[in-house]
Image (cartoon, rainbow, N blue to C red; front, side, top):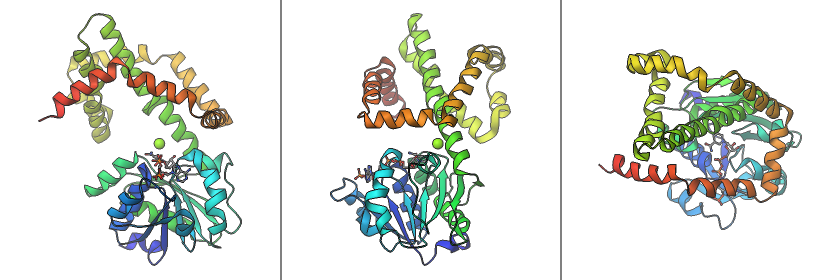
Length: 319
Ligand code: NDP
Ligand code: MG
């Protein structure tokens, strides 16, 4: 495939075989690239990766001699991993890739001189990056170059994005823009915003005495069906497809839920991302053993909405 030319004949290493790692490694492997997955000794993913047909080696071994290395371990573990396993094994002129700008933008990793640094950030969860690829399509990717020693780092980034995302909508950005917009999007809209919205709607109906199962369908299950229409056709076509009653309620009520105060809060959230305050708090949390996150996980796993959801999914997906 012409679009992958910059990667042909090169030794590619993917560090980590989690959500993004398995998708990058397998998509590029399926396209005939020479991919090795780097894992810690005794990794629980070792056998899984090997069984999928990719080469597997310890991280140090996989980085040694590799031309292009994509780091796909969790963001918070990357600085230590870079210091202990990657840096000493990086060959002069290697291309070091990231799928999120966090560690470069907040200067938690400063790659050694002589290293090309680029980003390919698929705009989708890793499991979708693989699933959509297997279906013959791809997810869009953002690419950026932070350091270009060899003069062709952008071509490497394009080729990696073309492979992982099948050349669907590659957009050039910077590490700063990707980091700040990615963090904002997931917090304010995609993850934090949406789950809290669904939760609040569900709670409101249940508190008012409605059947939790009906509340779940209305406030959680149907979210996907509506969003699928937005994804495929945009707001107008989605509104075309819903009833006039729903569309009228949409215009009247949406702005009562997302108020000027909410927009002001969004600007504050963005400010904390831009100033590095959010990044600092997150790093503190990881150094504190994920205490707050574990409490939140426990709270949600015991919640009514999840119990109802589990029952509803059995009903909806059993046939
Ligand atoms: P995961 O949490 O899924 O990564 C897990 C993998 O990393 C496993 O193979 C694990 O090894 C390995 N790993 C974990 N800790 C360490 C460590 N200390 N040393 C070495 N290896 C380790 O990560 P994600 O895929 O979620 O994220 C990877 C990158 O991709 C991040 O930069 C993230 O921001 C970015 N990204 C993620 C998206 C997503 O969909 N999740 C979306 C877009 C970008 P083992 O198998 O041995 O446990
Ligand atoms: Mg994202």
